Amino acid sequence: MTRDTVYKPVRSLAAQSRRQFLTIAIVIFMAFVALLATFTIYEIDAAGNGVMRFEAIKLEMAIRETPDYVLPQDKGFSAYRRWDEIPIATRQLFSPHQIKPKTLLEVELTSAQGVRQYAYMLYSSARVSGGLYLLGVENADEVDASIDEIVRRTLIDSVLVGLVVFLL
Image (cartoon, rainbow, N blue to C red):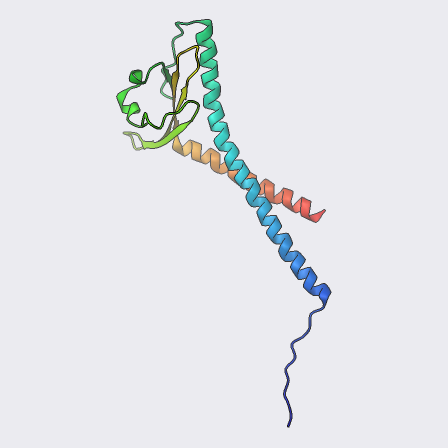
């Protein structure tokens, strides 16, 4: 009786270790890139909140210096002292139940001309003014293009930094 035994080639321990190390390095590298991308997206959101809060602080300071300060009423940025002063069309975009002090609300809308826009509202409840409603409107395509560029640069930078870290 003859036995036909097929033997698989045996890998050395060093070869197995190299393969496992390479797999672990790739997983860590991908996690590093994902972490940097997530952090960047979070920071973009925080920056948007910070800009509106900064505008609220500037207005509060102006009101403190001049109590009858005329609030800005611009197409891109407006401020109101009371909810009922906000134009009805704009008021309908936001629910009064969602409004909390220092919490930025965002809605996407399409203008009558078919242009996508983002509308932002921040309620500042400072003692000086008795509260301010800040409204901002931005072209959605421009905002999206800026965010896309930032995310793209972040991914490229995180890959480059990751390569430098892992190659050293």
